[in-house]
Image (tube, rainbow, N blue to C red; front, side, top):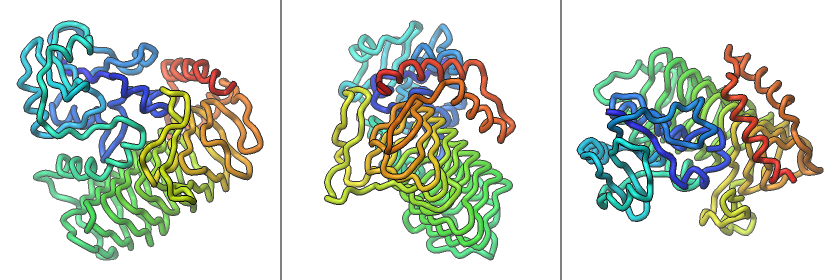
Length: 390
């Protein structure tokens, strides 16, 4: 049996985060949605996504395949329904196709017509702000999935635990010393070779993924996820960092989503609440305008490979595209197009080769290199972002 994650219109709603990846590669909770399904189904997933992403994300194989909506997280009831699908059948909820089994390339419209309504309560993401809004439930589910029938490394006596210590799990190589860990609101997961340094204070639900670190005296309010190979300091509240990104110094990050290969300079702060306490608006790539999120708290959405200099101030509901470089005083615009260079005093185009040159230096710091496929993806995004830069 083949299993393929497919993108529907949600891919557009999740821009700029999905410019560089299929929807199921988004991290929510501890794992990406792809990783959740692969662990639950004990298989490797392929992808039906945007054509320009196919070289990096392998397309579906031919033959008997169950296609699964990349925006939907698995649970035991949903997994059972998916596994029990026969050829030519599927499950949906309203206009949302959840899964369909076929020998052919998936046609979402035809598949919905042949699918039955499912009564399962699903955890899914429809918009970028769902990633932090629903992160608490996702962490709790992933914590149970990853720790069931397993034993945590012992927690050092130098730490203070508030709540049930059984809700703290340390993977091999994890180091936690002289921290205050509060599990009353949710579990705390420390990944392989991750570290919480001295003086840090953490309230769950919280996930620190493999090879990541909370620096000295970091303050974290859950639900928050720090993806793999990331360094975080200062104050963080209800945010998700996908991975390979740094917020290594003081400054506040709240109700935000930060993509991969990003860097927030020292004392970078974002507003997550308007002065009039009204609903926050965000730029929509689908509607090409600001739209109401319905949220009172909403901060920064930043696409992959974007950076900002020291003391950068992001206004409430700021969207930063892929490969931007932001610096200078004052508040930059609330929509910063991909491959932009500048700040409050004005923006110009960030030359593609200059951006790639910087990205290669960042990759090299982790003994990695950018593939030709990744460069081609970025070049496609660069060309597509021109209309926003203009």
